[in-house]
Length: 427
Ligand code: CMC
Figure 1 (spheres, rainbow, N blue to C red):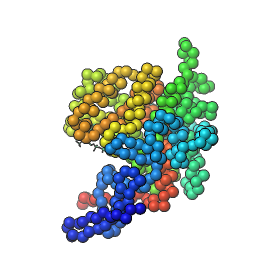
Figure 2 (cartoon, rainbow, N blue to C red):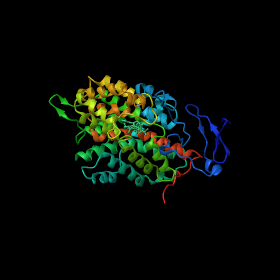
Figure 3 (cartoon, rainbow, N blue to C red):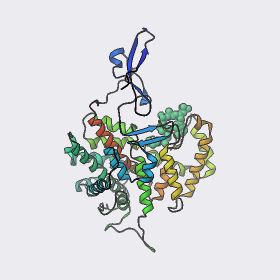
Figure 4 (cartoon, helix red, strand yellow):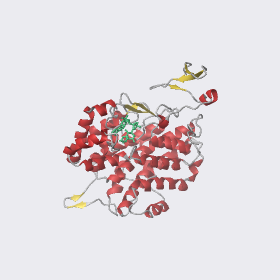
């Protein structure tokens, strides 16, 4: 560890205070201000944590200036194009890609753990048909903590891994049940003969008895290309270091609460429009814009400070260059355009927005680029997913990231209960 220090001077008193600089393996170094209050009697002030590292982590690295994202050192482009989502899950959980045999064991374990307790199915059935799948999903995951209460005091690696694999396996089933509940149609149980991603599409699309839709040309099969596209989408969402939902998961876990309750809180945090909920809002916005000719007027609204309209799917706290996940999705969109009948009208509007925004002074100055949510909606629509399922898709992909970050938090001896301070300005 580097012994360099950072000196703060209090210009009111002339006193100087030294704090250690700790170097990162990649990315910015940090100044360790954990003793700041003890030494100076003052707090530091950083609303929204724009300059604050809240933990050490070995999992995911982002270089926002270059537009780079890596899981455990592996480039996101390589993982999305050359590896499956389950390989990525294994990588995040174990720090290395699996061997063929390890992948087979992992895959089989997830298939066999994909069922949910019948009482949980009854709980989902009790929701109103009008319930948003995200609300059912966050409640269902919270309820999982009462079915697997044994995961509360985890102090051995095997127990942790079981807890993690259990939730990764059950999330698609919960999401599919939540979706079918919102349509008022019967639940479809998982099929252990199908892969993780195909099984999810099957649970969304099948009729009771496991048959797929019948058309005059025969059965509407789940296409390989659809499975591959959704698999890549899951990989692109798998982790993103200390974003709002992951920080929520770590904060809830820091109190000693059950891991699944912490994940449920992360799902709630993700639902907001500024975070994962943006993918649903992007399509709603493209539909609202309606025609390419209307794009200019909406761009003008996005730039007007007196109008609270924001261009959904644009901007990011960390990326000040193209979001690499968005770049991958744009590639995927182009590959799928003909084969999956992508909505060309929505794509034309999206292209026009992208073209104007990338050349407009307002967006250039503020470094506002398309983010992952800008492109995912058009692809998800082509995969026959309804809009309310877009954020649950993000949840399925991100669960492994949340669980891995939670495990890292729990095994880090330096972890503490999250308890920020405040600048009090009241009476
Ligand atoms: N449209 C128009 N102006 C914007 C936008 C936007 N989408 N995003 C930021 N700005 C402006 C903002 O008004 C501000 O301008 P000024 O400096 O003149 O006041 C400046 O850019 C900086 O914005 P900020 O709100 O201070 O930036 P932030 O880092 O706090 O917020 C963000 C990041 C993602 C919440 C924001 O860019 C946003 O609301 N984007 C739209 C929602 C969205 O697409 N969210 C998905 C994020 S990626 C997926 C995920 O990780 O969940």
